[in-house]
Image (tube, rainbow, N blue to C red; front, top):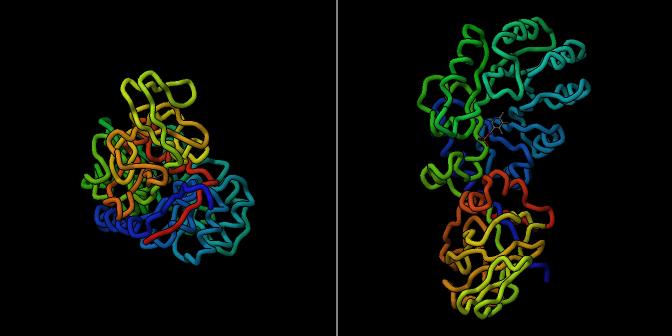
Length: 368
Ligand SMILES: *Cc1c(COP(=O)(O)O)cnc(C)c1O
């Protein structure tokens, strides 16, 4: 028998979330962001649930090829554009749209020989200061692109730094509107947080929205709002089982560093899940976990292949009992949800990082 750990990708939840985001997007078309192997879900596994989107956006050319191999004929966008000149051949061959954020990328396009003129999105650096042309240089870049026979259509994009927080999107949106004013082409600005929090603001909806994390059922602004507030369902469950039970007498400890010491007689369960499965090693005592669908807490240090949980609230649990590390408990255990965002917060990170870190050794099944 294999180790009992397993991840489940919920196709129906992906479909639900895409429909929810589409409703929030008004008339705009929806890119499903599938970078980082669909936020750790696996592009092939997530595809069925995400194909209700209007296009797929990602970074990696190999991932773009995988989307085409799945039979997707619609738009595919490379969010960082190409990394070297010969990548443009693949763009021509697979009809990939690509972001253009640098002069070098325009130089490469100018030298590129193709019968298939390209669809590009020119990227404005409106304040994030990662990629893109500054407002002062944006129109010159646009003019250069517009003069190239290799380019057929030029859209406009930017990315918000603070859509999830109190600074909001106002200043960046104003910079975007000014830089692109009067230029033809489609607009794309909103990530999950911008779409859900600022959707009604003029201009955010634009022609294309780019929700990533929300499609995967994690809230873009947790803990201010949780996934249920936004009507999103978890798309990834990480589940395992208890391998053993230990009865700690007062003063006894569990795990490396003896970081948890029982003050009273305490039953603890040892779970087949550790940091080599992608569970965060830094998750401290108190991190929420479900046993037989009931909420309890991690105790002591997470080790490579195991972690310990407090069985105080679940006295009926024993070896073989079902453990939900995040996501949804099985229907026979009540189907309770443990939001990945709560586990992430306890570990000092975000749902994004936990999803993306799901380890290759964890078997994954797809369920509707
Ligand atoms: C990752 C990414 C997104 C999606 O962001 P979420 O916060 O996951 O919604 C949108 N646009 C760009 C350019 C990105 O890199």
